[in-house]
Amino acid sequence: MQIKVKPHPLFEAIYRVTLEDGTQRLATKNLVPGRNVYGERLIRFDDVEYRVWDAFRSKLAAAVVKNVKTVPIKPGHKVLYLGAASGTTASHVSDIVGVEGHVYCVEFAARALRELVNNVCAYRLNMSPIMEDARFPEKYAIFISGKVDDVYCDIAQPEQAKILADNADLFLKKSGWILLAVKAQSIDVTEEPSEVYKREVKVLENRGFRIEEVVHLEPYDIAHAMIVAQMQKTP
Image (cartoon, rainbow, N blue to C red; front, side, top):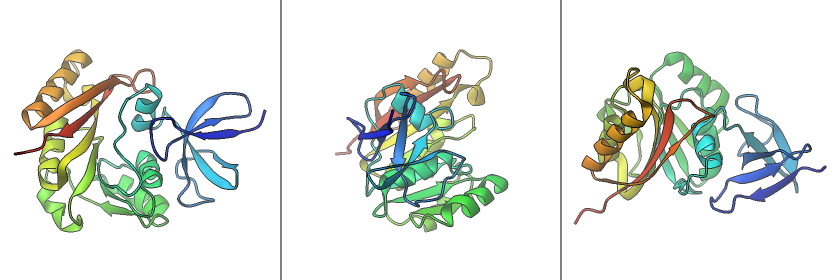
């Protein structure tokens, strides 16, 4: 069986790949042909190189596989990525936004940031690494040019929704979108994850967001959910 690649029916710049054995995977068009980021497979189809996107390694990919209805990140978008780590998901976001877009990658851990810089940002001109703590967005405001279209948040902090909302207040366009990968056990290891999700949703609603959906990410990530929300227009 030959490899086949088709555009995702809902999301721009995301693709569905059928591999030789008939299994289906997600993929993004490789912005830097010939280079992978985390050992992912590179495939060619109709003279275009794609990177297979592993849903067990990326919460955004897991949300797409779990049939999330909205992925607001699109080609040309500017994205603030909180908790970029070594760049697994951020690199796929870089593929999606393309050369006209940009990904501002905030990461506090020095080792992860070093891997992000050396393995990813050095080859991707649409990514900017920022070594700062996402709890203090005013510290890195100087590095972010204008307002962003989307804020993506994947951090291991107790107040995940609050931290995201604080960043959105400073950097997100009116009517912009957020994606929050909630790590329930980073917030309260003793509480049912579903209760943690509800509490984070309430925080976002109180900060002016309209919740689009909440997608549980099992079996790809246990006790994780993706919250997709839009900033409400202010009068």
